[in-house]
Image 1 (cartoon, rainbow, N blue to C red):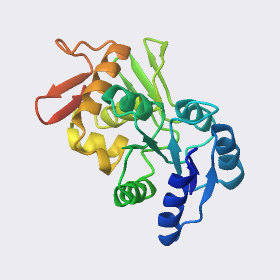
Image 2 (image 1 turned 120 degrees about the horizontal axis):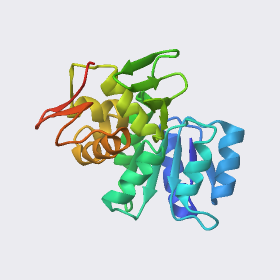
Image 3 (image 1 turned 90 degrees about the vertical axis):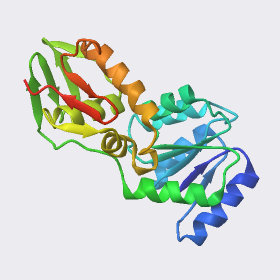
Image 4 (image 1 turned 135 degrees about the vertical axis):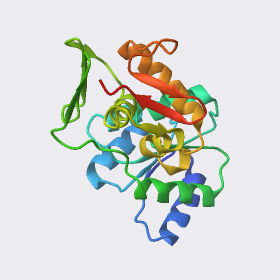
Length: 223
């Protein structure tokens, strides 16, 4: 387990709790040191503070995601919904606001280690109308033109499209893409569905691909 936080008391507090749970713990007080430690130690998960002295935690997350899929739990005093959505979109698996309770952090970490996130089957590809989704390459094209999606937007699109014609409930989508800890966070799903529709050219008022089942979930067009 890697802790990236510039506050020594918080690192000590987390280390004691994590070691009591049987985890091997590495600490870093700066973003750059944390990135180097992640490369050298290949941790099972990363606990990342956003307010680091040398670089913003979001930049650290961005660098990690260039070469690693390690689960990341963000710790921060920033509690706004937009901030949380942006970090989850950038590749964080979960978010805990400071001040935090250690039991909550440990529970969230157990969830991350239990649910590493969705990985589409290698070699799978789907074509629905003029939309082609390649799971192996993690690419999407519409009428031959590339559609740029974030990691979580792609995961959500793949989940819906691979279940074309079938209802995907809000809870199932949230759990599959964000993990069990976010099963009730329907605001994340609404934001990402809106972003996804905008990128693939799907009008909520007259949908072509993603159909809403009010209060229940979403259904992807089957042709």
